[in-house]
Length: 354
Image (cartoon, one colour):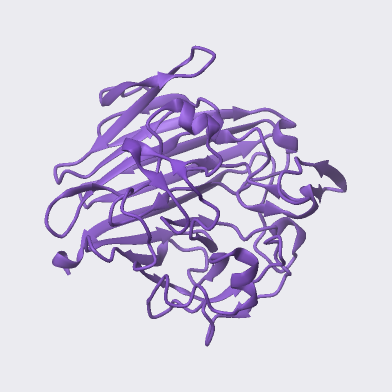
């Protein structure tokens, strides 16, 4: 296939090892633009217009590659091979035991300490509307079996939709559960709290966890609880209620069970309180992890911004946490030679468009 390298590419900076880090800019005729770096295939900036027509950057991030190397919040990151948590930092597959990095209270979080978002991905091709990255992950990388090739494609269309497609395969049975870990604040990345944002979820149930966010295996109804966002509610309306799952998560940091049954359908809608920006999330994944930046404190970000607790919300579409240990959860196992192929899209509009 002939490569189409005809888009906007610029230098983002360098790593300490002297490697050049690039930034790719996707843009459409409406002024919507996404800036993505090959360091972690991470989304650095996402410009959309608010109800007054002002271009607003709606994702948290850093100004330099060093920020992404040092940061622990996974701003804009592609997370894999397995996003979220695996209990006991181990799993068994085909009667073989695999040990992972213990980096979260005896458990494995986002696949360990050698994270995908700290690696420079190969750029396969790019234009003004899409960029495609590749990462080779060797057998045993992060403790997972199989030589794997992983591809992530960001695509921006004229309907102000940013689509992220994930493709992967391995030569051994392995786990794949990739996601994007962008932190959204639709009033602007530097505007403070998102407690006034309105969130609506296409989910009747969620998977509760223990004090370390490891699922119990239960699937609980959200009805009548602070976890019920079916009809839309402000994020801050019930986040401080005396409710055990909220206490364990220090706020919202939970997986909701989507009703899409594997089809690419609308999963969520988020509305900015001041900007009037509306973001619809579409996915074919079975779950969505909502995280309200509960552990972000005094994080120095873009343009002198300092991000704090509840300054953004993540909508991480994925398989359910610790699914490898629960037979009643959708399986994250991808058999040797099979193709893992999934995508999630974020579509932007404003209240003015409604």
